[in-house]
Image (cartoon, rainbow, N blue to C red; front, side, top):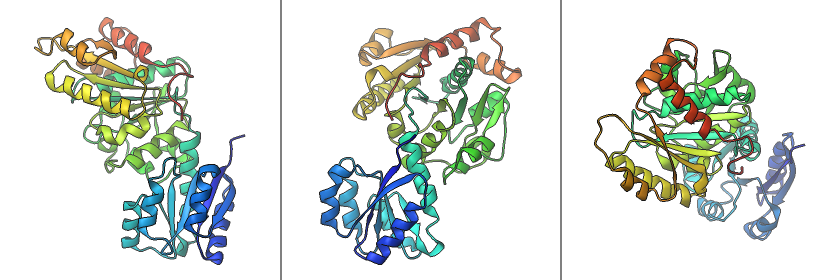
Length: 367
């Protein structure tokens, strides 16, 4: 049985504190609820309580205090509670580090969504499940490799989903011939397993696909918190999660990368791509991604005069670098024609690379 969430309530008003605590206790995923009447009692208790979430009553406690709490190492996700919706209050609270806003005027129904997200982030166990595929530039083959990784995971018997986060080009949908009016953008505001399964499109009875903003007509997902919580929720419903994260800024992906089984960076041997790859590797390492969970895939395009092998190999240090043949367009067309079949020697090399990159169920980071 999963451990129940431990919650805290900060309020100097006993009646208000009891009301908020009662809303938390009605959620089956919440266990112990501790009430703190002032800042001092909270700070003295935080090192030993291991809170999974904290609800703070406002305007009793100002944004300055929220900033202090949110910067504490190991601080739990913070939600602010108010009697009604006030746009200025919400903006100030979020700018100070709060992630959730609870409006008591409508019965505090946002608590259910908040608890669901936090529980999913804690329990998703992304390590060994999720692979982030990112690209140093456009058109280097990241989407093709993402599709092949999804196929390889499905072939191993895992329930698999391919998540398209690319905000500008719906590659997986175009490659697989899929379209829908709903996609990942519709799941950001809070989703359960049923809504995710309904939104996902099955491809040839092999794996599921969650179409991105460009393919489904949704809004771009440009928030670190939204991407992190979305992927955590997805990972709670599928065994293998392959994320096509082309054209997503690295800063937005770092929290998810820190718990992913692996991060696959696809690039070409151009000066710009190699520089980007070196900078990204430093950021990933600084963000807690171990070196053995970072994979570089170099697409050596025919006729391209780029950085010599010795130079980019030296620039990437001890990183693992794999070669992707210059056959991305042919591979994509093979997927678009019909269901995937391994009848092309050119495509077979990409398939073998996908098999090589796919981690085992138990490898990777920790949630």
